[in-house]
Image 1 (cartoon, rainbow, N blue to C red):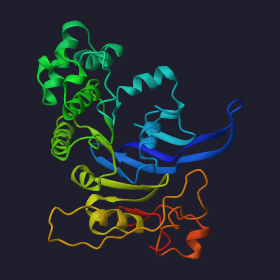
Image 2 (spheres, rainbow, N blue to C red; image 1 turned 180 degrees about the vertical axis):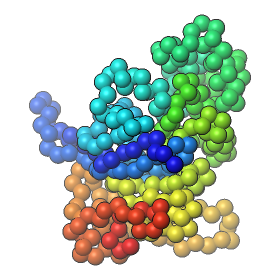
Image 3 (tube, rainbow, N blue to C red; image 1 turned 90 degrees about the vertical axis):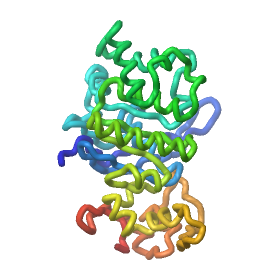
Length: 321
């Protein structure tokens, strides 16, 4: 299959300043440090990892909501970083995002109809009655009624608000949708509804998803392939079945062991990692995971492993594999 999105050695560093007046740069926080992966047309790539590992920053850099420090991002063969403002505005129609917080991502002063219609009007897709009809259809597609468009965001539940966010993302008929933890703020039963809705929409509109999450059970349900991220770097990428049945990286094994089993009689050996996640401001040399890895060797402390294909379609960055 052809790759819709290609990310090569993506980096995003944030300056750490000191001083109340002159704001001197004293260090760099390496939020994303050399991330590379492809997203194929029509697939869902899950991007998982602990909070603070750089998942959301990666998604926002891909869309240029924040500017990357270095690296390359190709969408349909076009270098996103090389586009000027006019060209980037045209490309944004094909690249949309569903934000994590359904309470903060919707304007409380606008009616739902105006929220969804805004991108349609800004990009000149439709106007007047035609734009209104498109909004009504989008509301019905995501499981709401057309009369809901006359209400404000605060009148809806969390799950309904996220449906509105999804409708807004679909308003321009995009090819790629970055889903930035779209169900993490919702109850479990509502999570299932939203995930099932997204799967149905993917089939109907031939969408490609980059699904960012920390809940591995949710990612397992929706993803075709899964990429595991730790401290700004990808440590493992594989088909979801291979990753869950045969994880190769010690960090992936620890993450999978923490997934709760909905059976009080079932037992699973949990891998408890020692120590805390190291600071991305001053990461150690070698493998970023070696300070918590129970199998770390001297090579792990000195040389950073490269993400390589160890099995067919299964990439991992680990000296021990």
